[in-house]
Image (cartoon, rainbow, N blue to C red; front, side, top):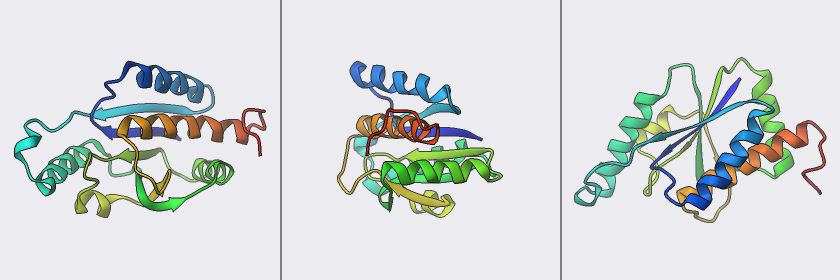
Length: 157
C-alpha cells in the first residue's frame, strides 16, 4: 500500500516545507508515502466560494484513480487518538487498498462531488488549521503511527 497526501495549494513557508519534508523522509523508511499538490485556482478572488470549491474539486477528482481509497481530512470527520490512528493505518495496510489517499481541500472545504467520491473523512482536530499546518500535523501523525506500529520509543502515553 502507498499513502498519498493530496492537497490544494503549495506550502509557501520554507519552515513548514522543511519540517514536512523531514517527516516525509522518516515516513518513507516505513511505508511508501508521497505528497501531491494541486495548484491553486487562478483568479480565485473573482470566483464565489462555491465556484472555487467546484473548480478545486474537479482538479482533485481528475488526479484520483478509480481504485484509490479516498479519505478527506475534514474537521467533521472521525477523530482518533494517535494510537487509534496507528491501528487505522495498520488495518488499511492489511486490506487490498493499493493507494490510500488523504485529501486536504481548499480554503472553503470540499465540493459535493469530492465528498461523494470519498470513502470516509478523518479529522485531525475540531479546530481549524491553515493548510500548511494540516500537512505538517498529518505527516507528523503518520510518522508517529509508523513508530507506534513498530513499537519504537517516539510516542509516549
